[in-house]
View (cartoon, helix red, strand yellow):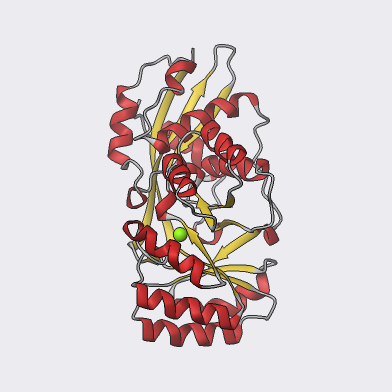
Amino acid sequence: MYFWQFRVYQRPLLHPLQTHHGLWEIREGIIIRLEAEDGRIGWGEIAPLPEFGSETLSAAILFCQSLENPLSINSIFSIPEQFPACQFAFESALEDLSIENQLRELEPKNYSYLLPTGTAVFPCLDDILAANQTNTYKWKIAVNSLKQELNLFEKLIDRLPREIKLRLDANGGLSIADSKIWLKIADECQIIEFIEQPLPPSQWLEMLQLSQDFTTGIALDESVANLRQIEECYQRGWRGIFVIKPAITGSIQGLRNLWKKYPLDLVFSSVLETNIGRKSALRLAQEYPKKERALGFGVQQWFNDSDPDWLEKLWTTSANN
Ligand code: MG
C-alpha cells in the first residue's frame, strides 16, 4: 500500500506558444507524491492535454479526489483509460520508487528544438542556431494563411544551414489542398524530416492517402494520442511516423507492450511537462530500441527553470490533498 498526496501547479510559459489549437500561456498540471511503507518516495506528474483528447485538468483533480488513500498497486493498474495522463503519472511514481531518482538529460543533439511560431522565429534565429548543437528543429504551421506561411518558410530555410532537418507541425490545421502544396514543397526542398498531423484526426484516410502520394514522411500526432489509437492506426495500415507524448499516452507498461508488439516508428515528444514528467518520459524514450529520430524534448527554452526548490515550495504552500 502507498500513502499519496497531490498538488496542482501552474507554470507560465516565458512567451505564449502559438499553435493551430490557439495560444498557450500557462502549463497547469498535478504532481503526485507516492510514499512506500519503507519510506521511499516516488514522484509522478499529470500533465493533461485535452485538445489531444486526454482528460482535462479538472477531471484529473476530481479523479484524484476520488482515489483511495492508501493506494494499492492494483488500483494504480486499474485506472480507467479515459484518464491517460493519470495512468502515466501513477505508474511513473511507482517506477520512480524503485529506479534511481535522476533525470538523465541527453545531449542537445538528440533533441528537436521547438522554434517560435510564424515571424517570431526571425529575431532570435541567429542566437538559436549559434547556441544549439542540434540539427533538428520544429516549426508550427497552419497558424497564418498559406500564402503568408509559404513566404515565411522560404525566408526561414534560406537562413538555415543545409545539414538541418526541419519538422513542420500543422496540428491538424491544413486542408487537403494545402497539405498537398506543403508536401510537394517538402519533397522538392529536401530539408523537411516530416510534416506532423497535416489534417485533423477525422481525416485519417486522407492522411493515409497523402502518405502514399509523397516521399516526405507524415507523422501522426493528434490522431495517435493514446494507446488504443496507436494500435488502431497501425492495424488500419499506418506505416508512417507516430509522435508519442508519453505523459498523455496512458499506461507506461502498455506503451512498452505496443512497441514490442508492432514495428512502430516513434518520435517521443514533450507536452511541456515539468522535470518530473520529463524524467519518466525521457526514461521511456531511452528504453525504446530505435533511436534514430531526435526527441521532441527541445522545449526548455519556453520556461524559466531557475528555481531548484519549486517542488518543495509547491508542497509547503498549498494543500490539495
Ligand atoms: Mg504535434
